[in-house]
Image 1 (tube, rainbow, N blue to C red):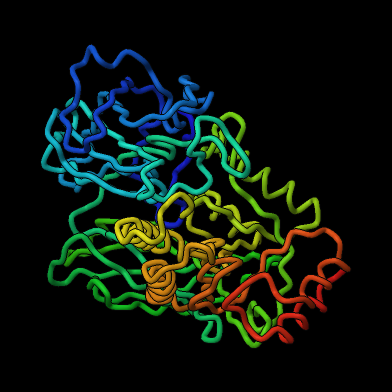
Image 2: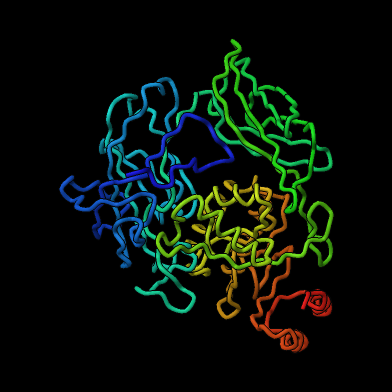
Length: 483
């Protein structure tokens, strides 16, 4: 069969030495909700599944909507011979909720967090040109109250605003080869006022004389800057045509990064990009590049009838944006789901504004274990997505209920807001969309009436939301709404 979702899953940090592992894997279920469990014998793998689609979906070939506590995936992997001398990584875009990885029955690593990506270093466990057995074990207990799950139903069937579950692997699995001196991570900071990009790289290793070179492309014009290849040392790259990124002109400056060793050889090459824009809040207005921006957004929950949380194709991601824009919207609040990096890339290049949110529903926010799980996963997601210019606002929590507020709850909301600002001070933070706020840059109220007169009457009465800003200011904001 053709490889499902064959496109590169990480357009913001793209190198040529990669290989998709999407497709048919052997599949098994058992009741061992133990991440330390050893892989089952080969005979236990009595089904096949199409990765990256979750087993609840039709596209997976399983289509089983029941609860999946313990899932096992197995396939044979051959690393290309041309990858000798490189660090070899297995990447998993997302696996809900806890995952362990084995190669040839040796346990190599684990991860907790059902929406965040992770990678496992395979270098010492595989040999290029030889076959190896790869196993991924996924443990998922959405009813535990300890794992964020978004709107995944805690009952067998969908009910109310709770929908079909997602278990196990649900984003692309892939291999990547990186030179030992290559880029490990990259932070791209837009400097709109200065007309430049500030790059903050991290490298896998260090050797004297190694350099980092960046060639920036602004249409047909280029600039180039070079500096020492040292982790955390910024490289400032002026742009030849510093066009701002806007929804009407979503111009992206291409960035080619090369790691050059002491002998002048390019040992790593990565493609990235930057959109020059600035977001800030002044008074009761959200400013994009210094201009007030009215957000007319859909509430996008990212569900697909055949793939659930996994889009059936890359074109389907684009089609969703096109349909919403044709209906008169200029963006989307990405609600109770962490959208995949390719969606954000399409939003970047199409000028589609987004408001990114943690899929945190399902946890007991008064349980510090659940809070730790949420903060850990949210940290990984903010780091993954913070270089996308289309994202305007971070929302770590949504509709935290005033009926269940306790000291751990309040601490969680404050910690989530502080963590988000520490990871990305360039965007406003909406600590908890609607209802109860603790530490927010944007005050948000969730009122669902479709009648503007009723909306005005509701706001004029004793407000339905606590921990709110000055009511007169809030009423003035709503009075300016069209219609």
